[in-house]
Amino acid sequence: MNKKEATLELGTKPVGKLLTQYALPAIVAMVASSLYNMVDSIFIGQGVGAMAIAGLAITFPFMNLSGAFGAAIGVGSSTLISVRLGQKRYDEAQHILGNNVSLNILVGIVFAMVCLVFLDPILRFFGASDQTLPYAREYMEIILLGNVVTHLYFGMNAVLRAASKPHMAMYATMFTVIVNTLLDPLFIYTFDMGIRGAALATVLSQFLAMTWQMYVMSDKKALLHLRRGTFRLKKRLAKEIIGIGISPFAMNSCACLVVIIINNALVSYGGDLSVGAYGIGNRLVFIFLMITMGINQGMQPIAGYNFGAKKYDRMMKVVTYSMIAATVVMTTGWIIFQLLPGYCVSLFTSNDTLQELSVRGLRINSAVLPVIGYQMVIINFFQSIGKAKISIFLSLSRQMLFLIPLLVVLPRFLGCDGVWIALPVSDFVAALVAAWFMMVYMKRFKITKDDKTHELKVEEQQEDTETFRRSYSYYTPRSGAAPRGMAPQAGASQMPEEEYLDDRTKDKN
Image (cartoon, rainbow, N blue to C red; front, side):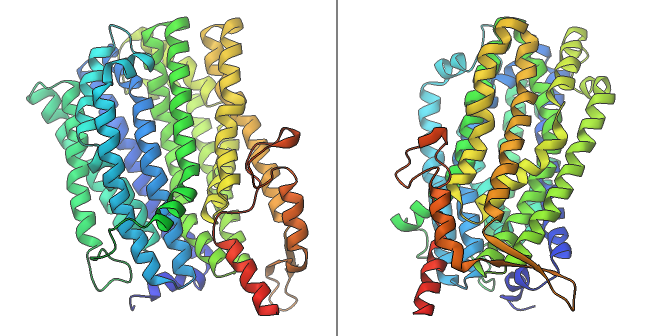
């Protein structure tokens, strides 16, 4: 296989086999990543204590916020690379890769410096008490010192998938899990470093994996590789990367805000151990969320490439397969958490009070998991084709429009249970909204069936394109104002689709 074939197969290979090829490594990598986070929690809970688990839960907003910046760059650049490869604009894809590295280094350093200076006040704001603050501080000091490594590690993993190297991304993640699992007991128990040891194991494992990623992406024989002259930041490329990455950034930033509200509400209505219970439940639900994210990561380069190549039937086929797979995964998680919550929770702690709080919270939190899968696929689909505004809105709707108001209101009437109940209610409403947006978007395509092959064909209704765009913009003009109560998501894409429309117009003329 020559250096272009691995990329070109995105537009030629059977979609089912292609999704399996790309999604399985991503799923393994994401499961490994969730296990990687669980390993820290298990060792800290069993080796340091229940209050340390609560302290670790306080750091979740920090991790989400750091991940928000990393996702903005990693997902933005990898999505843009996929589309540029589909357009056969290889040199520009190369420069996007270089800018990905530079942006991660710049943002990683600035974020770490600011947070280290104001660490204690930030942790207090995140919900830390006098009992949990020392644990949270010890953990985050080490994590922030290695923040650049973390950004580069996740950023390069996203690029590896976009560069048709999903197995390499999987190997990198699996490597970090194995190394972290080996180092955790060594640092926590043998060296008696406590929660600091868990943080050090995390950073060190990511550093070793990141070094290997850089080596892999330095292969000059590869179509996409690191090279001199591509690291200098270009304003246009940086703007496009951030423009696409703003959706996952917004989602992670809102997740940070939501966890802050949840932590403070749980401390007020249930105490520090309730925060620990939320942390345990979060880790468990995250396993199935990460599997679904792996499916999405396998889908994204396929959907992005075929959108760029105008092969809309292949694009929609991979989205459909992804929705089915995601729904099956999340339903499996729902069954496990409803039937076996006690067994799951016991992995993290032997504290009876913490176990009781965690079981109740887990059952409520996972109540509507089956509908979350397809919602996540829809969000990532719009992101993969450059529909940043739609993706942003769908990312924010669950958290900003539904969850936060419920977190403010329900606990006043239901106490600690109100915090837990707000989570599934907002998930369900957000899933309905995502389904509506997908149905609206699908109206721009004409689906027909080939009489000979009996295969479905998806074609864009070019003659109705302008009418569609005007009707879609009816809800939200380009200025960002939002009449009729609609959020700023439905304007035209910031990315390649407009280029295609212009090209088609030129061709017709």
